[in-house]
Image 1: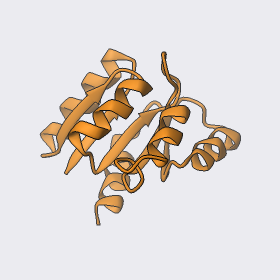
Image 2: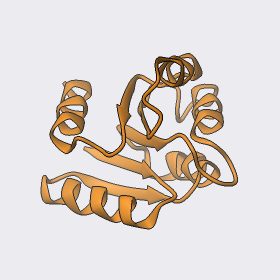
Image 3: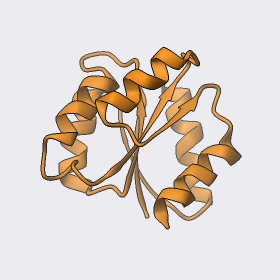
Amino acid sequence: MRILIAEDHPDNREMLTRRLVRRGYEVHTAENGAEAVAMAKTCAPDIILMDISMPIMSGIEATRILRRSPEGGGVRIVALTAHAMESARQECLEAGCDGFATKPVDFAGLVALIEKYAA
């Protein structure tokens, strides 16, 4: 399974990449929403882990763009955010995210969500 991690914080990106690769996933990374949209076209991910607050283009905007594109219309997108309020969750789901996970990331919970979408 191919996972695209869109995360602007290098430590978070590195930690998620390392742990997911150890579990056998093929991982690609993007540093902002614009890069995530471009990468989705080239690496054809099965799941995108989309940080919501990124420079250049937010995860919300990137999700909306992907949902209107042939490459991103069917891919599962999981929002990653430090904002745990219900309003943030609702905004992510309205933008087209399939799931929502808060930071700091509960890795076991995130893997369970990935596996749920892989089935």
